[in-house]
Image (cartoon, rainbow, N blue to C red):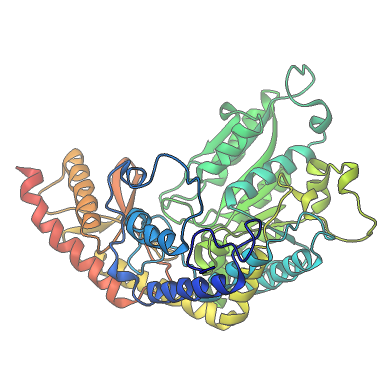
Length: 494
């Protein structure tokens, strides 16, 4: 039987792809990935398909009979690739740039082949113990205190929600057993975060029944950092009204501007009122791997929990979020539920299923471990340092150019700016101009930038963080922005 035939399943219609067929197509896929990583710039950064176009290229009905892997891979190129926005492209400057690095991709491949579930220590001891070791290595690299214990979660959104749940459990009002609905004895629980914080903090409050009305979005200063005096005033107001403050989220590297909240002052206030302090360092926290950037984590030794994302700026394929807590026992109080079929005889082992919502857990530590070993602390620090240097160069170009202006500080590798030509001061016109500029440069396929609003102004964001980004791509982005801004002014102003 020819192995190229779709019905060849290795001698039996009940078996997997046979090993030699897997080897052949495995080599083909690895060769494809190699060329993709070698020259990703041959693709437009932003997908150019129209809504529904990818679906239209696929059959409406499922395949009844087996199909050739060669045809599946051809359809991947023909249908799927045109609909891909290339986050691994060196000119991807939108949101927060990320990198699927070579060692990380190989780690994902090995994890997929092993296909283990790390819910219990016993279900794969290496999954649990490598996770513990890898996260302790990362903790050491970041200079975080030794008392923190870590667990890998999919994203910072999940980690922050788990932190809120743990903080709620720490209040000790029997929510685990009795819930929150219909209780006359339960005070209104209130939590606090910056008006610049990531939306996941508020989403966590929604999911856990805290409610949007009980999330206090604290005002920020001129550099978009949480105002500690406003935080304390909000806490005092809630206490005076008979409500129960319980949780504060500070941010290191806010989503819009990458500003750094004053964590030491926030930690002092949290301690004064007995509140759980969670630090969202999903983006900016990893910068502390650079020795001269350790200051960004000042005050985190007082945090009850902190999250950093290796998949954002540590070259680990998404998803991989490192969540550290001071006291894992509170997580267990909030989440541990062990039916008979999950009981094992081991004592003094870590069962990560007890630390959060998920039972099934992927072997995410493998790719992180391989990335840290392959690049080493020095290599990781050098690459992040280079990104910060590139961002400072771009910020300098903006600052020195008459028709552009920066709208926020740039403590890391993200720049918030806009074009503001002389003689155009109407904010509505400037908003239209900058929105058109973003759409125009993105439509070229050469770069991809995103936007936010700061003080009501439409603000362009350029984030540098891809492992393959160098001076050429940053320089070309700046050149393209200037050319298109000059071209657009007569159209927008007319």
